[in-house]
Length: 254
Length: 168
Image (cartoon, rainbow over all chains, first blue to last red):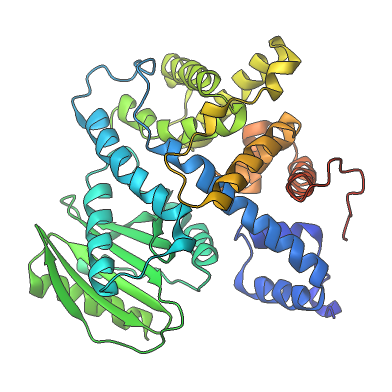
């Protein structure tokens, strides 16, 4: 049933819903509409799946080493582009395998350990990136949130850390062991970067306290809060990193 | 950031789009290369502070239109295995799905393919797509509706899509 007050749900609404462009209120109306219209709901699911498959099919290209022919911009550039391209290509092959094989998920002995490792790895890969540290930048924050929320199937919020001196750079979608994972990146005035890695934790709904682990140069605070798991990673000392983690937790639980 | 860095930052996404658009590694590399050369030589025309990504994609779109106009109609639909090579095959069904989508994309008229990809892959807003392609917003929407519905039908084994259901 469509409430005439709110305007009927049109084809454009369905697509905007799929693409994460709808404001919260309208999104709820579309969901309401879909619940009552199984044929359209099926179509919307197919479109969502289509976007996902497009990414699975073509995202690997993002991280392929550049062909020799794309030379025009390499003058004056040192090792950065090629160097990172190679590093990322290697890691992403693994990521793609993870993505493709995510339905075949093998049980790991310690999910936490995996989670922390993945967060630290994603941090190490993307924070040095000058070319494309994020997929969607902070100036499209609303779109970023909608898009990642849709992909993770959970309502995400982006904490703002400007008071602590960290501005949002943007975010990206990454393949995780249990499906898509979001990474938000922050940067202070000196270029120091922090990442917040967010995954859905399936049916788990219990909260955990902050736990800390060190992976090489970086420290990781991680915790579970309702349906989402968070890992904050940075090359900060433990007290400083904890300060940021607490600020994030407080913003997400006002 | 220097001009090289600014443009370079967009190369991976230009490559992804070009690959999806052409379905062919060599054609995609050529398209990216031409786009970069043109952007490089006309960088002074880019208004600083405006959307560089949109500007680059506009250049690529124009080149793509020129390429496809001069090329044989056939090659537009040519499918190259290598273009969507996926490193390993742990999940057979997932791979089949990827290949099917790639094949279905080739059967889409290129103007619908562009819209479906700019929205679905690039996550570009409908307004940006309209600007990049130089078409009205309404045209973007109708191409998106048709393109997605056609892909859905192709992937579900219904070969031709004459019965597009318009839901108002």
